[in-house]
Amino acid sequence: MAHQAHSFHMVDPSPWPLFGAIAALLTTSGLTMWFHLNSPYLLMLGLLTTTLVMLQWWRDVVREGTFQGHHTPMVQKGLRYGMILFITSEVFFFLGFFWAFFHSSLTPTPELGGQWPPTGIKPLNPLEVPLLNTAVLLASGITVTWAHHSITEANRKQAIHALTMTILLGLYFTALQTMEYHETPFSIADSVYGSTFFIATGFHGLHVIIGSSFLLICLLRLIKYHFTPNHHFGFEAAAWYWHFVDVIWLFLYMTIYWWGS
Amino acid sequence: MAALGKVSRLLLGAAAPRSLPGRSMSAAAHEGGGARLWKMLTFVVALPGVAVCMLNCYLKGQQEHERPEFIPYSHLRIRTKRFPWGDGVKTLFHNPHVNALPTGYED
Image (cartoon, rainbow over all chains, first blue to last red; front, side, top):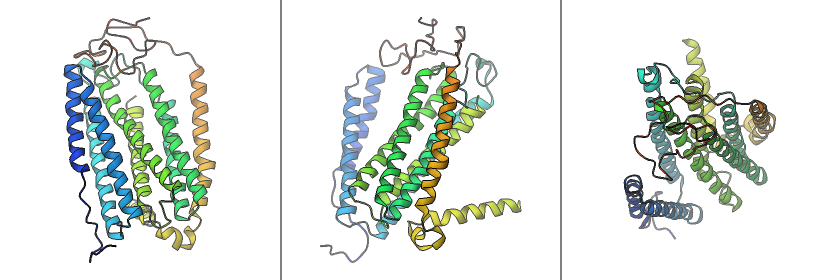
């Protein structure tokens, strides 16, 4: 029984922002303990608390929107801006690593043999597994669009099928990349080539895992009837994030895998 | 230059209905049944594309890959600081068959 004369959402007091900040501190100082003092326990505690905060905070957002009806069109607009701004910040995050790659590869130093790829590095063939990875992510972009249209057209069965296929493709990409990581003849410690390659593709892989997890949550919510044909912003946010992950891969493929080989 | 303007107007025009939250999909007559289009694209373009690439990888994987000889270049196999796992010398995805340690291949 709301008694507000406006369409915005005044959120109830919540412990998650503070606990999230504490979790971030535990994680970062945990990394330091692990790297410099050989102890992983603080990091494990930090990752655990981060996961718990994420699960509970987002569970609360679902409760506020889906079950309590607080997500009016105005509130939804704010959530849209928020997701767009977040994805924009992630674009800048990756921009830095692309900058590092081009800085190192456009003028290769004498220490690398004055060439790119450096002497002694045999790059991966872009027409083998990297091409398959590209096809997998592009296909998943098509299936997630199919899922979106199915939701809009109230076709439950097709939406579930399409979203499931999207997630499976995402998992397939992760499996392929993990296998590739195990099979590459060069490692992260192999000059700035290895550094730029594994940092850029590694963070991308992490984002694929995050995106797949987001889509999986959407699948569970879809099955539980949380979405309506006109109101399904959680799904849209996941789809936007997924397309972003796909676009980052395309840039990685064209620059590091193809041009850089 | 004129073509560039045409292309960007086309992209923005195409992007606009898609970015609206589902409204145009049910409203505009020619967009009705959008799910059918994307379902068709999934089974005719997307999945066959993946299958072709899978076949390509399988066939290329049949060929034997020769392992390059070990030359102790100083810009490769850098170990400024030990890794915080195992013996600190192997990278996270170390594969003894294809990755050499700073002292050479293990096998």
